Image 1 (cartoon, rainbow, N blue to C red):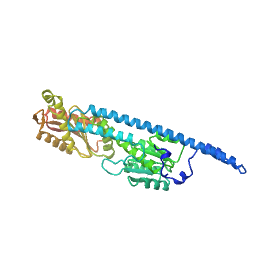
Image 2 (spheres, helix red, strand yellow):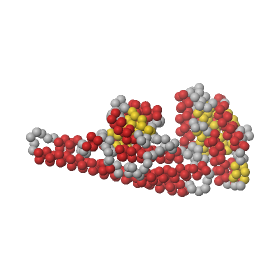
Image 3 (cartoon, helix red, strand yellow):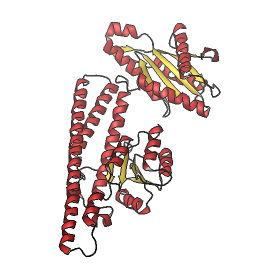
Image 4 (cartoon, rainbow, N blue to C red):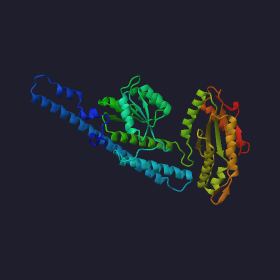
Length: 433
């Protein structure tokens, strides 16, 4: 456990040498000595104060142990539940389906390792999927504190520093750290203000924050946790405990992100689902409106899916849908967004893309589908799809997200009516308020 008994080297040696700290009232009562008191009375009062401090320390350790034991129990339970989900989904499927099962198993393994490795020093530091060192933002107005934290973490993490609360907010928005170590008492903006601003900004709302403070009052800790901090450390603490808390927070944040992605992913195709599309659509329209940039929406629908389902079964139809999705995914740029919006329909958002460029994208996907074949149930099939394209121009003003999707949907149905296997681009008149 992360209690005092495991401390190896306090980050504030002078505080550690001073011994444990009792509540202020007990200390004052035990040390309210006046000149001329007998030595025996002095010793007696010191003993009372020291015993009160030890009792407070024991109670703190007991609460920490109970909290960590409950945390480990919850992690182990979540891991077992995810393993059951993976077993239920483990029937044969396409590569995209198998990829979803593998991701669930990876998350389950991460949770299981976290449950087993909650004690400090039992795991190697977490690494990002890219292999890069995680970024840790240290926000403290005391230079010595920033230096100590940096020295403790610099070997395994990339360290950013902020000398006050406002600088912490600015750096977090600009550089997107993976975790923040936050002091409560800082100039310009205190720790509570930082948490408020983090929570109010979508770009920082999911950054985990560990509170690092010398304050011993429970009210401040509870308030910080209520306002978004994920953990807290009270000074002084050991380097080993610090590293373990940071690493556990990074692992938990990575697992939460993966779970979020799974909840927003279509299991058959590996593309985003309709819920994720709606969120992304609102974000992209707001961004296009703010920066006056073009945004193109492409809707696609697989042609002649019903005969495949009728003749070869729905498993064959699923294979056809997954194949169309794989072609779409291969044509997307890093900034593009593709989703399956139901059945055999797909939607793609192309930021900073004019309508003509969207038409080229759709025609490229359409041509690839028409030129290729897929073997399903021993039969070689050529698949086709119809596409509707609509563009929100930079000067579209207050044109809504719904009007963009409606225009692309109308163009898609026009492509269906005109013979399928083709691309139709919506004109300005096709947009509705």
